[in-house]
Length: 410
Image (tube, rainbow, N blue to C red):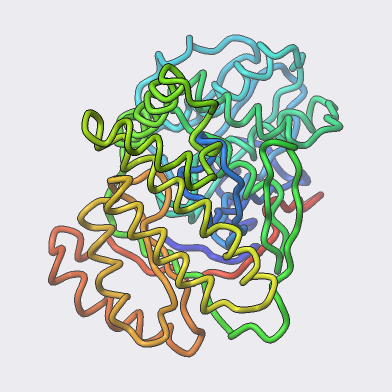
């Protein structure tokens, strides 16, 4: 099943609600997007600036207040979990729920209640999504959708939208136990059609960067390897984050004036830290080297995007991928198989792994007239190189879209 447009998705979730005894008729549908990070991947928990776009793979949630203090939700993507039902303020303890999508509505309620937002109004809801797992931020999209909907139904307004980002991150950090940063949530919540989103963590500011006039017609492509990535709490992501934190602490103890790897921008400072630790901790130096290089490339990417020079954006995207593979050691064999295949296709401007790493999806920036050739290359080569996933992989050709859209009274 792959429903890809709003009309069919809305009709599908409404029909499914009726089948499951949930009342969403005349209610709203909130649509939350996926995201495509252009830089710096894995930079959020290292303190770097971030740049990315929203993409048109979505979660649609139809919902309507049910006049009680109970939540009743059903996911079409996880039908074996049946209807998830609970009383607001009465959810299982954090990190006590098995691998079930129910962790997310439980977590949204837990975090909001703990942070002082009084929830008393429940709702019925049915969800369906076509965001591939691993790499395009399905969990962040779901967390944001739930947080926004719970706040709306309970008539709670937040002046600072970055508080929404903080809350959605807490769902994953504190309730689920996933050590994610804020990149995914920011790139989804603030995404605007046709725009790049630039986040500066030092100032907590969002700026929109239009693509320069005259840019080559291009597409963003998600390359779903068909692999299943475990949660970030069970992946190399957690290890890399801990390594980066260790590198910072070692550098501080050695007298270097830094608080995060993002603070290492000066070449002489970088060289001094490398010289200090290359013999004893070469792997930590590699992690720092990726962040240092990606930050240097980041500003060139922003300038290229503004100028409409999508070819240079693609070149930098590719260089980042090589750094993620060789210095950050966060990629995986299936992810690199996809990259190796599409790199051979004329018109592919850049490619790399996406997201938390190990498994999931890679991504590419591709000239529009090369998309068919890319599909053909993947269809020919990927099943041969990864036969275990020959019937599971997918190619997602995406557009840049708004991150959050509300359809009322559907």
